[in-house]
Image (cartoon, rainbow, N blue to C red; front, side, top):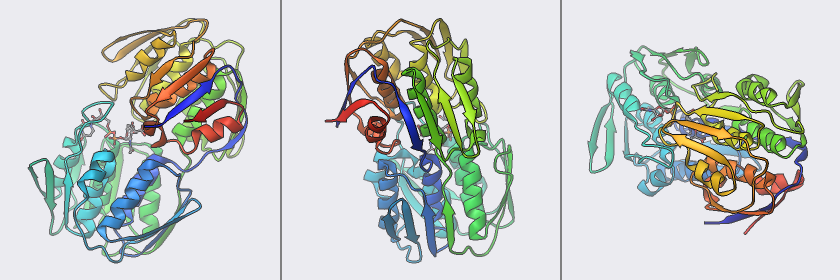
Length: 416
Ligand code: EPZ
């Protein structure tokens, strides 16, 4: 796995355009199997996870062309129903094909997605909901064999507003008999983007962004063209990179609404933030103020995908921060790596207590997961001396050309 070397102490400054959201692209690429037609999707980031989705679509029989941030998927000749096991192993979110393939093909075989670096990642809510809609799902030898002659719409109450389960049910509902209601649905912006994509195909989905989503089954779906929403987590990561290096940045192609919980915390840490139509400017303070408490919650609460990055910022604050990770069971692996760089962090279960220190020192550290790895880059940007980050493949799953972009913004960073 590749490495990054960062010589810390350089301010991040300049302007960067935020690309399409990974967590919107993945369910939308799964949805391209639904219409048996041509799907043109713009603002596709160059990410390992997108490469894997492309391989899965090709393995299922779709033809896929990708050029300069646009992907064209022709799902007319869908011939296979088995998601290749080695691809599921590389990307657990391939489970998102369950709903789409049951809708289009009535059959799908996928290996049970294991846990990952941030926790066991159960899929019980996905399976319970799809069974309620009439899917027969057999779990054998580590595989899920799923079949459904005709899915039927029903009234589903999610125990937890799971993003993936909400998406799978939406995708399962588009051709179902009758109407599917999803209660306690996830409200993330990526769910709204999926609703917009499906409706542009001719589906009848409403309520995305609220806790209750309705999907009315239709007979057919048509060719579609769509632009992916900007990646709110990538945008927020660059804002923290600027804050931790006392810099100044302008982000282009942002939807402020999606960033509110992060902007609120960054203002609390002393950053000045000016918002314009589709862009925003952040000016960092001389000294980061401690944010008393950060609790991760489902959207519109503070996102778990920004917990590690904000923890890094707080390692250099003027006080104490208490972080509570409410979404995933094991999402503090970056803490030990930050401690190796001189941070003062105590982790106890879902709670992490961060006490600001005057400085971080460069060290050799290991990325254990996508957002934890990004957090180590932020620490390296601010640390005195050089930092070597190993296992950067995790980071490349969710950040397009992050070393190239940070170099353009003033960082001394290079890939080995
Ligand atoms: C999506 O994962 C995102 N991934 C994650 O982003 C994000 O952290 C997460 O939503 C929460 O916002 C994609 O969209 C590809 P969940 P997902 O189902 O759908 C429990 C990143 O860094 N749960 O909302 O897997 C689960 O264990 C990634 O970009 C069940 O118990 O998240 C977790 O504790 C990381 N049973 C919680 O719900 C289920 O059937 C949230 O999971 C499903 C989930």
